[in-house]
Length: 492
Image (cartoon, rainbow, N blue to C red; front, side, top):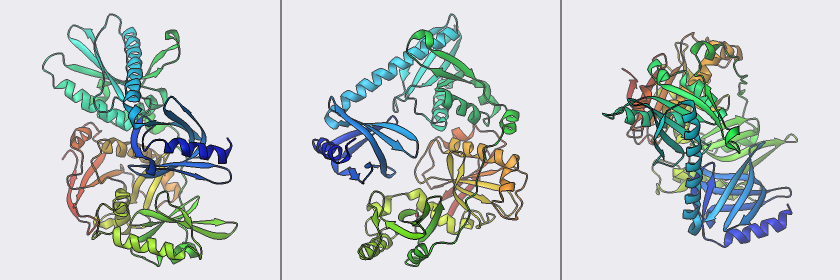
């Protein structure tokens, strides 16, 4: 790709429309042209856009324009390549129709495969879910008095947590019917998702495990090449006897000279996160400065989201102005609660408060060391702590309703509990000389009042009683002064 020429041509194409619909990972985002950014360096073009979770940048690998749409190939992370489609808003409705037709066709192919598994069965109903058309809902009559529900991922993008929460909600509605009650549900997904679902379902209550079957589907060209394979839900014995994934503890190191100087500007508001790439400084949870050591020389950049500027003598005043804006707007007494500095990364803000005083949540939790964004396999746990009695605790934080919160936390529990039971966490010395107690890891689900999802209790009722979970409600104005309004054990 010729970078200068390609950048000019792509800019011209983007400027041809004021509004675009961006489609990535099965999700669509409506964007104004001003919310899309292109930037160039010597060796790459960065394509960025404003999402609900902040500004996202990808390295642009290739692009082409055809039939009133832009198709981009970008890299996300070191190795992952993904496709992004940009459609002018005027043509978006047509694109949605084409996508829905394709998903219905996949649903029909899956239903045909399922009926082969159930000789003599009859298709009762097939439809896409009304929420976002990500799943196909299929009902098959096995006999005159018996029906089986099947939930199939026709987008190929659903996470196990989204999949399971959707299945529980739909199955609960089907069970409330007076006639033709459904007593079993099949979950049908691509192989990788199906295998992860089988692990997640292993920590459900026995009644739910008995109702579920998980199938892996590989839809290839030609009916005779399609496969439909059952993935057995893991037993507890198999779950805990598997070889654990290797963990590496992030070492706590002293802040660099540059990082220390930045922290001194607002020591009560600024904290530091270490990573393999260097140091990230956050103002009440919002990343605004980064320090890297390049050839033994400390270099710093500043900016929120997409705006990144090298910190030097020429830009010092602008950097100080950003800090003053953060002090003014990222504050409970902000003059404008719709300002982006106030609204961005609310969960990280809540995490930053707890990181300074975790005992506001529970007096038994030990403040240091407290692990923020602890990596468990491919996931990042909001907070991992140790209680004074030696029990591990996972803290999952939300500031808005999230139906998947329970199953997300339970999947973290499965991974951490595996490491605890095999002794890997103790060997790693995460908490220094303190002994990790040989008892099940606790889960704290934390959210402001009225921000727990309405289906939270239903999801929690599916989880094994072995998992001890607490619903911790904090006050609505937690930014000003965090208080625990209610602490309640699920199932009590």
